[in-house]
Each structure stands twice: as structure tokens, then as C-alpha cells.
Image (cartoon, rainbow, N blue to C red; front, side, top):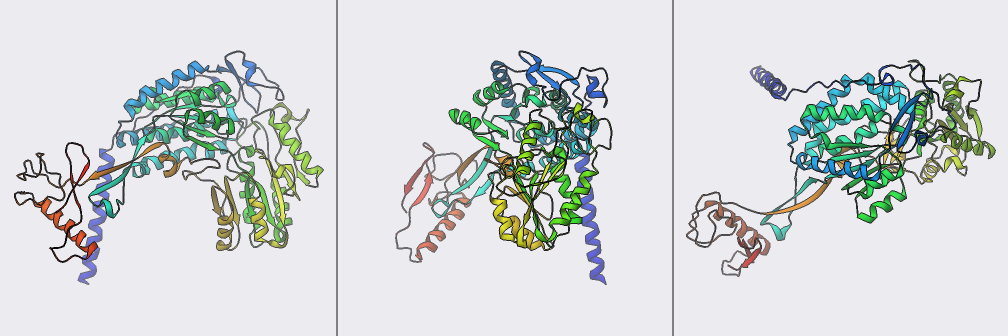
Length: 605
């Protein structure tokens, strides 16, 4: 009874200590400032616009804005959103130089200062969430739900992770020095690369800016971000938000530069002196440009993800998840399923269930109602690409279950850049739609005959794209084995693929998570000689410095007890290696520090 009471009291004491610790931590933590971002345009303030010029959904082009400008529009309503500047190469170089000057101060920032910036941004996102969602929807055509999940919550999680765990992955790490270097300690250090250049796509206007930005800043870098000409309007609001966050957190204002423009602006960023490039969905030409200056490169090249459904899985439990995966953001996702490999045993049931869901979906302007399921396709030219893929598949034997057409008047969907949610069944791997990235709202269903795991793996791996994958089975072990066998950068067992902060890539290197964070650093290896004497004066005649740094001092006049203690360890190590108990046997070489050259000199005992 006494023992139980003692343990209970100990537990209460420990709990009280933890509570006091966390309360003190909260009280002593630097207050997080509130950042209010002003709304300067009615397109930023309201969901429905009136009296705006309408662009043609089939011919709209960013270059319609004229020389040196980018024309912007809402892909759902085709409302004219005005123009933004198209940066010249000279303007891009100015942005890089401004970022480099700001980074000189930021690289010396403390971990607490960087965490404070992450907390400031996180609070700003939650305080200005409605405006962030509205701007993202207006510039990309996605629904509010898609913007909340894919843009805001994902970014918040990355900020939370960096604030909580970022320092852990950038602190120096010890490494083994080896038997020949026992007189040294070795460690790996992570130093900022300097200025990071990021060329990002249009499908997630907010997240694609903040994803490289947050990691780059936490690693001590500055960043220059070149956005797509199809996602330029939103940079006006997001740029103000970023500037205000930097100002509120006390960080250099020019630490983040946003560049808008066309191909020449992107090329100027690559060749203009950035220390590392982070690029999403850009190809070989970018790699060639980086090679000329030996600039390190992160490439994310998109995906064509397999979604495997075994015969022992439940189509009823999977149907909503499958539709969310392929139709979220109208299929315009880097990590999103495009190839549904469904086993013969559940094939027809799965087709029937997803067909019913798709026929009940509502499509239209996403800011006009909270009950719209599907928005618009961002690129006007992409509508024809989607239709060509569908027509080719049907021509070669695929069955069109739902959708599969470009809306025409008098349909109200013809007033915007809409393509309906589409289902193709009986798709075979020799069809063009199974070889090219769709990047649109099309579900391709392939029947896996004889419920064969081997056949599913073979088809899943018969693809040049490999961003993510997932598998569903009544047996967790079976699904896990399938995921492990699929060649992809990410994998999920009985769940939709995709992550919040874990590293991901389908090309070179990684972004996000510990791997991506360290990828934004120069990795430096440091070897340090043991320094064991801390006395202000050393009476050892062998040492020439005022503070002894010798790990093997054997002089009888040395008064440093640490030296003699380490000497005994050194002798025992040599004795253990050579089994030399006889002191008359010759010693192995011993090393002392040469204070003049900072090198090593050999001295035999």
C-alpha cells in the first residue's frame, strides 16, 4: 500500500513538473504578432463579381495582356482580373541580388528567430484563411474544399512541423571517426546554400509558393520564386501577405522575392546566380540550363499514380476515397491516382459505384456556391488534350462510362474552362491515355484478370512516371507488400497516397521533410582534435601554448590531470589493439597537435 502511494505521489509530482514546464515555456515564448493583410481589389474581397469583361474560354492567353504584361482571368467565369508585370531578365537579376543581400543577415539568425517566423506565418494563415481560399479559387478554378485541404491545411502542417522539428534535423550530427582517428571527433554540419530559386506550377497557387518558401527560410536561406503565368494574379495578395509576415517577425523584407513572367524570366532565374533550384513539373531544358553553371537542382516531374484494388477489398469503403483522389482539384495534382487497377473479383461493383457518384456530382463556378463538387481546368489548351486522350481510348476499345466531352452552348459550363468528371472502363495498357500524364478529371479503370498480384505490380511499374502509389486489400500485409513492390517515391497502404510534410519527388532529390530541409543546405564535415586541458596555464614544457591541447602528453612536469587521464586511455587502446602488456615493447605512433601548422606530427614514445 505504501509503495503504491509512493508511486502515485511520484507520478503526480512528475505531471506537475511537466505542466509547470510547459506553462513557463508558453509564458516566456515570444508573443506571436497578429498580421492583417489588406484586401485591395473586389476580386479579393467578394466571391461573385459583376460588370467584368469576359474572356473567351477557348482562346484566352496570358500574352493577351500586351508587351511586358500578363493577362489574368478566372477560369470558371472568365472574368478579367487585370494584368501583372512580366519580369525581364534584368528585373529577375535584381530580385536575386536583393535576396542575396537579405540572406547575408538571415543566415546568422537564431533557431528561435526562425521558429518565430514560422509561428507568425502560421497565425497569419489562420487569421486570413477566407481570403487565402478565395484568391486560390479565383486564380485556379478549384473548389473551396480543395483550396482548404490542398492549399491551407497542408501549408499549416508544414509550418507546424518546421516550428516543432526543423531544428532537430539541421543541428550538427556526430559521425564515427574510425580507429585511426580516435584522437578526433567528427561531425556533419548543415549550412544555408544562400539564395534558392524556385519555379513552381499553377495548380496550387498558394501552397506551391509557401512549400519551398517555408523550408528555405527555416534553413537560413533567401528565396526567389517564379510562378506560372497562369497563376500570377494571386501573387499580388500572397506577396503582400509574405512581406507583412517578414516585417512582423523582424526578418529582412527582401528575403522572399516573387517573380512573374514567361520562359525568359525562368531562364534568368536559373542562370542568374541562384545557389540552388527547386523546380516542379519542369523538364530536361531546365536541367540543361542548370548544368551550365553547375547549380544543384531539385526536379519534380509529375506522376501517373497507380491505385490498386484487390478482390478482398471493399468497393463500398473505397468509392468515395477513389473519387476524391482522381477528381480533387479536377485531377490537376502532381500526386494523384490516374490508373485504377481493379481486380476481376470486384471490378464491376467498383465501376457501378463510382459511376453513380460521378453522375451525382455538381460542376460550376466554384465561388458561386458552397455546394459545387467540381471546378474548372486551368489551361484552355488542356481541354483539347483531355478530349484527344478520351477519344483515342474509346477508339481502341475503352468504354465511356461518364463524361468525356467538352461542354458546348447552350450549356452554362461552356461559359468557362470546364471538363466534366469522366470515367473510362476496360482500359488497356497499350492505350495512349495509359502512357501520358492526364492531369485532368479522368478515371481510367483497368481489369486485373485472375486477381493476380503479379499482374497488378507489372502494370503499375510499366510507366515512366513514379511519384506515388497506393494499394487496398482486406489483408494489411498483402497491401503493404504490393506497395513495397511498386516503383514510386511515395506509397500508402489502404489509404490515398500523398503526404503533408514527408519528403516526396518523382525526379531528382527531395522536397519537404528532413530530406528536403537538408537538401537546402551545404553539408560540411568537420574533424576536431580533442582539447582536454582547460587550465589557464600549463606547466608542461612540451606544450608551447598557454592552454594545453595535447591528448597524449607524457611529460612528468605537466600538471594537467586530464592529459594524463586521456593518456592512460590512449595507452590502453594501443595495448588492447596489439595485446602488448609488456612495457618494454615498442609503442604505436602517438600524435600531438602542432599549434603552428594545425596539422599532425608523429612522435614515438
